[in-house]
Image 1: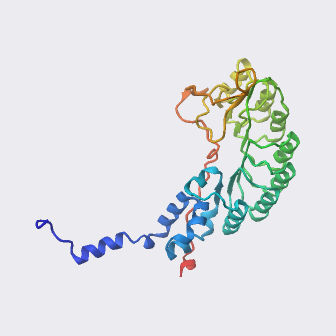
Image 2: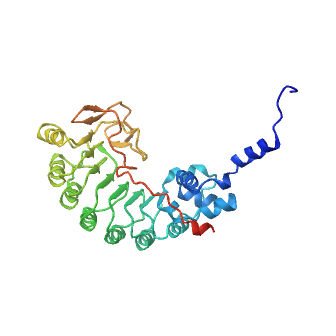
Image 3: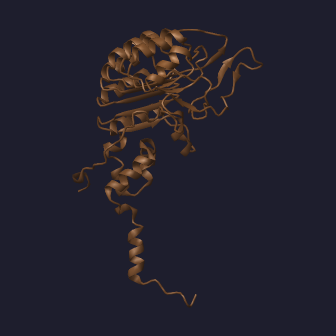
Length: 324
């Protein structure tokens, strides 16, 4: 201890200055807050220093709002009024909201609120939002004229709803219609596939996970969606992707995920129904199937991800006058 050089007053002050998080540059704070997420910011704002609390009100921090189940893991108390929190977060965006995701909650009124307050919305994700009606989704689509990405996971909407949504959202580039796969009983239905094929011609990315479409429905999609770059057919047990269909995908360089490919990367329950087995619900596929890319054989990456298929990025400017 006697041989150690004591820290001078000047060095101590320097260390304290380095650790003064309240004086971080605003662009650094913006990156930190964006990593934390809008809802965490909203719920934790009262527990941070005044400078951070003031910065937490910046509208640009609320351009992307994710209220699926994952964000709740950080909190012990799960008794929040989800709709109230959602409305407050939307209000804080001040009309700059471009991406909204919600899971296991949501009403027609909340969807209408988003549509009325968010003219710049590009991406909407509904996961197990059973209380949202088809009429509410249609009304939303008619107002969200800039919508480019729509994910519907474990929700019940008719093919008529999908047709109207497709017609209303002429800029739709990515569509996910993720459901429950049926291996047995064998149920065939191409209504949803035809609604997609006839009303979403600009699609680049399509998930129809667990869909009941057949080869006829798939052909209609390939014929109607000529710009497709990636197609997820996992647990589409009625599809036999071979022959002309496979050649078409190969010639157009469409990234494919086949019906038996792994579901390990799914954020939702990917169990499928097989009533001929001892239990109706089987666990996820646990094979190591790779993603097929017609151009290069096996593709090393994940093909495309519903969370980032359009790769939204957000500018990080701030208003200096706000902090004067």
